[in-house]
Structures are given as structure tokens and as C-alpha cells.
Length: 495
Image (cartoon, rainbow, N blue to C red; front, side, top):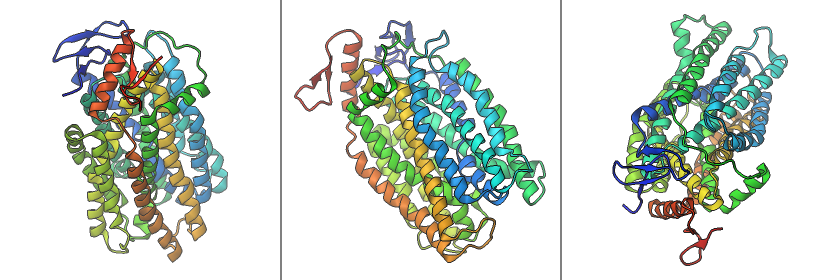
């Protein structure tokens, strides 16, 4: 192997030796202990509730039960996510600059988790007397509060994971465990409303729909709080180093333009996220009105179970080939299988199940490979800037992820409304069915194809990352260093 093994403290190690952290911290064991990996991954299981339930169950609940117009729901989700374009990088910038005895990341989890739990209850349990347009302010306030609290928790949480290992392949394993917990949590969160409704014998109709979401909030609010506090208590942070020099947020974001791998990764991820979020936002509508089925929960379960089953395989493929190659292969399978859903119609549930299973098999690669590549990019950013700014990169990354999801809802729902979607109707006009087919199948396939083209510009394979790690070790030690990705022979000297 070309790359040396590096422990979580930043020291280069070989085998099982320990090394002193490059920033002067205490010696640390090479590798991340299993208990630390599990404690770090655990919150992802609970935080998955701010995913499918928010983007799939909540819009349909507010449209069909609370009777908020679909176009209003789409506009509010898009507006809340646009606010994230400011708050996510800001949260990352603040987390990078936080200096406490407990670290830079963990205090944010401790403070943000209770706020997230309260906002979740507010979104899932609107007052029964609020219906129609009168419920829009409640939806807006709870959405904005939920997304703001999620930012305060998830940006530092994800940044904590990028710091746990400096080893090229161990990063994939550590972050792959977190992504496996996220997928398991997504399956549980997607099934939670129906499962809890059966458990607590929710009545049929509108009252039952309200009871199911209320039960979901009652379970997930304490789960989010407990697992975030567990992570804060059990996962150690590597030292943050001396406080950074005064650097404004705008200047810090501008400096990212020098990071060519980061730009290529963000563009590819944005396009791929649009290709995966759009089907997620529209699955309940597609299954109901194109297939004429009520099995949305079963299809979601099949999709994510296939993703969980395939994730360890993609971790091994990333180790054997490269992270970029694993991502490209998984994304091609994920979107290519969905192309087969175009001609399906009413009664084609079996064929659609096969499409969902094949597509889900590629899902793991689109999660674990970009996560691990993000850690590689953060290391290269430290080489260029001389500062550890993982959370700033995660904040920008989170904006891309959220805006992709928001665009899926904010654009698709108004299009359905223009096509003539009738809230609460069991049968929709043919124009709505055609629009659902185009949005659910056609747009994601095109978006993923464009993502694969953008991914070709990403330069950090295992050998390039080894050169970056060597240059960073030299820079941390106070010696001269060169940018190994620069076009000049031997790399460009760094200040």
C-alpha cells in the first residue's frame, strides 16, 4: 500500500503502534475502537426521522388530513431549506471556532438535541383545530424550527465523524457504519407511523392519521435526545489546535474555491442527490396514483433493506477499486434500475418491487463513498489552508443535500398542482399521472447521468490521497510542503 496508516490523533502509525498527535495532543491508539464507532453511529439511527417522515409522510399528512394546499407545502419546504443556505455554513464556521473543555462538536449536540426533539413534536402534532390555509403558519414555524435545530446538531455531528480516522480505508468503514445506522433508522422511521398505529390501535380515518404521527413523535423525540447525549459522552474529540486567526465566513467560503476535489465532489453530489430525493418525495404519490397501490410502506422497506444488504459490499468494492469507482457503479445501478419503471402502470406491483430492489442495491454506494470522500477532501483542505475546517465543509455539504431535497419538493409539488392534482382524491387526472411518471422516473435518471459526468473530475484516489497525507504530515511538522495536485511538476509550494 502506498499510504501510511494514521491514527485519529493525526500521527502516522504502522501496524498497532501509537503516535503523538501532530497538534501536540497525547498519544493515541491507531484505529478507531469498536465501542467508539458504535457510539458515533447511534445518533444517525434516530436522526433519520428528519428524512422520510418529514419529506414523505408529513407533506401527505398536511395535504390530505390538515388540508393545507400542496403548492403551499412545497413553497414552505423550499423556503425553509433556502434558509439553510445561510445557517448550515454558519453552523460549521461556528463549530470550527468553538473552543470549550468538551471540544468543538459535542457541546452543539448537547444543546441542539433538546431543541430538535421539541420541534419534531410540533411538526408531527399540529393542533386539531388548525386546518386548511390557517394551518400554514404552524407548518412554517415548526419546519423552520426543525431544520434550524437539525443544522445545529447534524453539522457538528457529521464533522465529528470526519475526524475519527486519518486512514483512507478506515474512514470508509467508520462512516459506513454510520450510514448503515442511518439506513436502518430510515427503514424504522418510514415504518414507524403505520407500525405504531397498529401497536396503539389507532382508529381509521383522519383521527388515526393524527394518532400515528403523534405516536411517532412521542417515540423519536426522546430517542433523538438520548442517542445524541450518548454520542457526546462516549466519543472523544481530537484536539482542535489553537484558535484560528480571524477569518470571516465569506472569506472562508471563498477559500474553498481553491479546493478542486471539493468542488467536483459537491457538484456530483448535488446532481446525484436530486436524482435520489425526487423519487423519495414522490414515492407515496407515485404508488397511489400510478400503480394504484397502497403499499408505499412495503416498497420503502424493500428499497432500504436492499440498501442495507448491499452497503458492506460497496465498502469492500471501494477498498478493492476506489471510492469514486464504487460511487459511480452504485449510482448507475440505483438510477438505471429506475429507468425500467417508466412503462409501469396500475397493477404492476410485482414489476415495481423488482425495480425497487435492484435500485436499492446501489443505494449504499451513493451514501458511504461520498461520506468517505468528504473526509479525504477535508484533509486536502487542511493542507491548503493550514487549518482544520471540517465543519465548514460539512456545512456547505449539508446545504447541497438539503437544497436538493427541497428542490425535489419545492418544484415537484407545484408542477403536480399545475397538472391538476386534487388534494384528498383517490383518483387523479391523466395529466397528473403523466407528470408523476416524468418526475419520478425521467428527471432522476437524467440528474444521475450528469452526476457521473461531474464525478470524472474528482482527482483523489488512494495514491493521490497518500501524497496529500505525506504533504500534510510535513506541514504539521513545520517543514516545507507542496500541493501534490497542482499542475506544476512536483506540486506547487504551499505558504
